Image 1 (cartoon, one colour):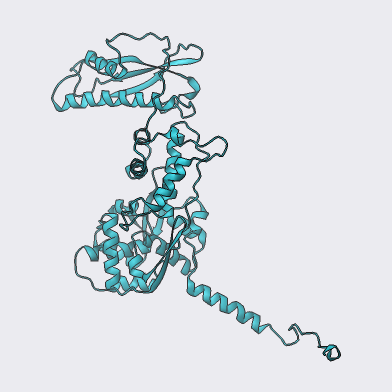
Image 2 (cartoon, one colour; image 1 turned 30 degrees about the horizontal axis):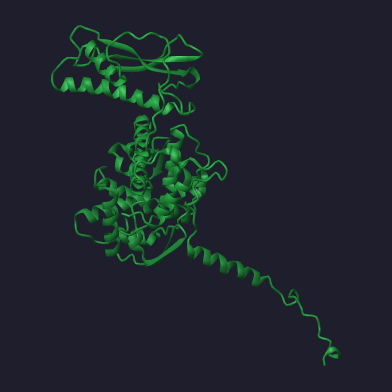
Length: 455
């Protein structure tokens, strides 16, 4: 089956009618020996400069792109569903049936060959945030991973909980102040009242709110609405305490009962020596480790949201090789939440109880939490540990960047936090050098006191 949308050559006042063509000669729902096809106008026009290679209207055509793209999506879904349902039922779909189904979507009473004369553009419907988010997910489903597309879901759920049925147009700022009272009220709700599923309490952390503000900005841009006014004033850099090499080895050497906990421990330790993100870790296959000049090399394509792909190659330490070979390249990677739970339990059994202070921000509230390190261990901490261990072993920042698959060095710098012990040694060493070069003659002397002025 082939579905395409295209512009008719004839235009009126620069506006080209948009046409749709459906062909399904090789589809099981087609009559054998026939080449069924349907071509019809979708009753919408657009300037040629706003028509993209993805066969959609660009967001630069403000006020019209969302309505037209929604119609294109409905037509595409209708054609696909009709053929798939017919295939499942063992039936055939004729060109007349296809045309009738598409005309129903367009609101036309009868099938007729459309003329190239442009129709008046329909008034744009006012879509809710939930509807725009669904359109965004549908439009980008071929570009981004399902996990990346799901980032719109909490934005929708929090808006529906705060004010159901809100539209993006209602969020636009006051022209004078360039601020939106409604968005600010929503952010206050997120800080003070929104349920936090991680802690079971009310109020989200500032970094979560920052992500939602960024996602809301994307939806505004997708809908062709102004978005520059919406800025993230919540995101901050979190201090993460990675494991020491001795702690990684203690975790690796601790005898654990066979089962999920020991398996999660092995995967975590492997990750401490190789550093891939959770998504890449879960996708690793036996063929991803190659042998070059006696060394085992882990190679994979680093991806994040399918936006940018970078090939990463990491030489494997004997510990990582042993774990990889033990599982024959099929690492038992559980869900992220289960991995976090199992690793905490394994780290507790291994006695990784170094005291740690964790500082979080929730709006204006500073939240401090003290406890043993095992309480703060997560699956992603292994990636931070890997980067820090490389720096502890005197690898330079560029080498760490390549091993992590970062496109920019500034991203790697967030992992380059020096160890507290190293900072203490550097501080004491600096003063020792100053003390060694200090002489009595170089001291600043006080001016002599004139006793005659005393009274």
